[in-house]
Image (tube, rainbow, N blue to C red; front, side, top):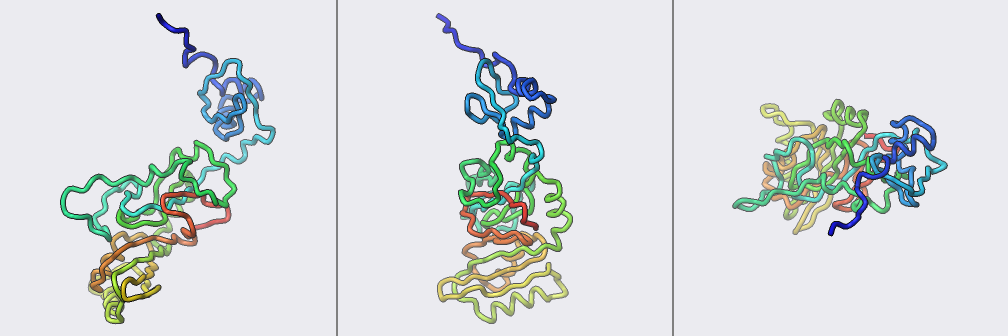
Length: 269
């Protein structure tokens, strides 16, 4: 016997109801909903196509269409994850995978969800579902490396990280095995100054050192995946880990691995 269950398509679209309530255009109603300003029986609903019948529909008295600006997300990519940009080819990885067929790496884009939002995000931006739509992944990062990734809806940020990328400083911290000798540093500096094989502009220094593990700081102009690994190979240094901690004037800070935050209004690359 067939049960009497409500059809999923009963009622009218929430956007239509809001347009009648305000009143406003259907597009403006959709923006109010996508902006998180509309509640259905006390619960925020962000889908304009949501169907309603006799529920209580309320519009936040502070609702405004002025703040529907595009957002930029900063993610701390875990090592071994694809960077989520269009180009997923990664021929210059700092950490070589073991021999044999390796499983397909996870994609950093999958971490861009509400559950991974940094609890101490100081941007003051309200998290909305629409913030995960139409995100462009910018500035590639080696699969084996961890660190700062940028995903944006903002055409101005995209243009900045495209047109000005070659003049922007990228800061990497590379962990290597053992203590870095002066001879190893000389090999790196010679490679950078070799006019026969010109390399991108970079500054390399020892950040910390111990007999077991040392950290090198690389400040590189432009995005050049594989450059740090190439220089460490020249110096016969074995890379243990690599992390991008800064892109231009935006730093990774205390953002935990696998979590993301909003780019704050005062931050500029």
